[in-house]
Amino acid sequence: MSASWRTLLVLALALFPGCSNPPKGAELLEDEQGWRCVFEIDPTDWTCDGRNDWFVLEPGYRLVFENERKTETLSITVLDETKIVDNVETRVVEERETAFGKLKEVSRNYFAISRSTHDVYYFGEDVDAYKNGVLASHEGSWQAGSELANFGLMLPAKTSVGAKWYQEMAPEVALDRSEVLALDKSCECPAGKFTKCLEIEETTPLESTVKEKKLYAPGVGLVKDGSLRLISYGKAGEKR
Image (cartoon, rainbow, N blue to C red; front, side, top):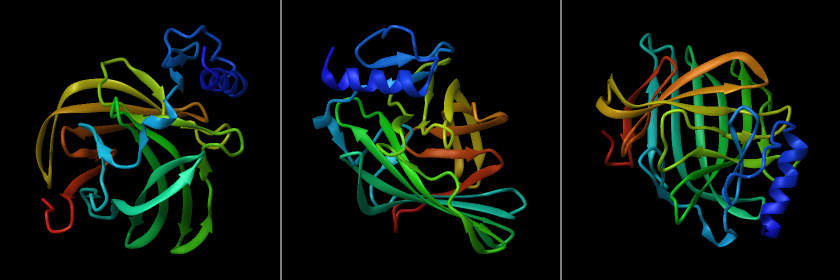
């Protein structure tokens, strides 16, 4: 067992009492409910640029969403900016949410991708939450390597129905999890019709009643987020 694996194993056991099963392989440790909660990556394998079928981590790429009543919007932009988080150079992805024409939340999210597997990992976020257009809090902010937080898996390049993993690993702050429900969903939205979509259900042990479904289209990324539907995507000058 490598030193890096031992470190991650000790961290998982400390943060998640359920992560007590013996490792099933060199790359993962699952808790008692089968959620992957530890991920071992060679430090030389990280990069802050790339993509897989479900997630585009390339500067300039942008996704724009709105609900049917056009009262809520969400834009996700991969910035030409990086940030060192837990000794890893991560790509900054900005999310901006509005409700009834007023700014609701702006978050700067930190991602890195594996060169060898193309799995995308989540290293945290800085959150500005607004109320009536005024900055109200930074609730939900976390960064790997700080306050016992560790990076989680955002989206793997290859997956299967029933796969489950932690996206966020910040005790008492952010513990979002993903479970694959389907790999063959279709979705029609203002940006187009998409097939062979990945359907994921997100939950968190911090709020047991919260469940949210998302759809990801091959080569595009997120196309449906709860009631929000994709209206445009692509890089500047190439939007569809």
